[in-house]
Length: 310
Image (cartoon, rainbow, N blue to C red; front, side, top):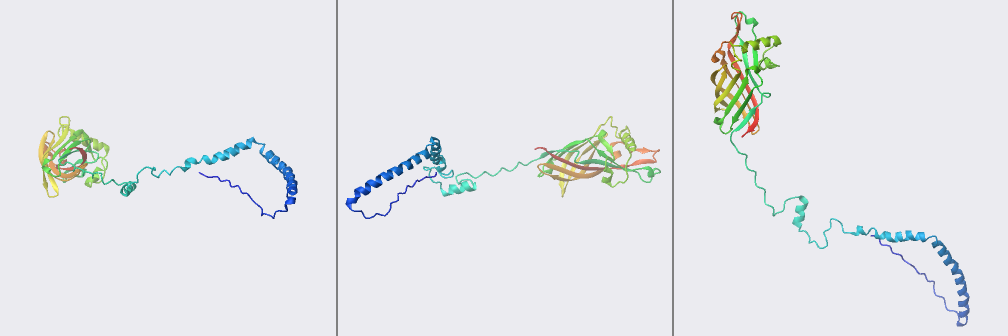
């Protein structure tokens, strides 16, 4: 708040020696009339200057009132404590400044360890590979006409239950629809180092042949199934034993698998071999047997999944 101070100064000339008493009355009376005559115009002039306005009086009042407007600014700063508030202890001020908890707060309890035990994972066919390598028999009369093929499973489903601390608690279940088997799709031939490609017409013929009654007989046995029976750790891998069922015939195989599992994801890979005749049917043949497939089959398993439940 500003403070206006009006200072009025009174000037006095130096005192002269008083004249003789006999002349005081004369000198006093003569100057009395002149100052009065001279003073009157000055007063009138001042009055004339002030008269136009009673209106100027308003600004004068406004000017006088102005000093009172800033009075709120005289309030104590916002960060100053109230007059009657007790001073904060230095420790409390430090705590408030750095955001740390006061000494009275209890320490946080340590997080409980995550429960252990088997986890169930749902396998994702779009992120894994299940396929069979079918080779033609070399050395026959029609050998020059034969080709190896990669038969890839599509639209399959499966789950794995796995306990990192107890592999014997594992359980694997996979179902593959025969109708989802595809001949040399995409770049699958490169997975086995095979050159060339297969025409759409040849793919259709091969699919019709392996789905027929003399092969997989898909109209009667629409699915290929795998169910594990035991798991045993063997060095850096796990031997997974189970039965694969093709064309209604089951065969028990032991498959060495490389397994990597976490609380969120699961992956496993391995290969095994079996024969057509293990499942009660013969390899495909044509041209009176001059062109035929080899009895041996190579199965490749490379699956990935995410945790479904504990």
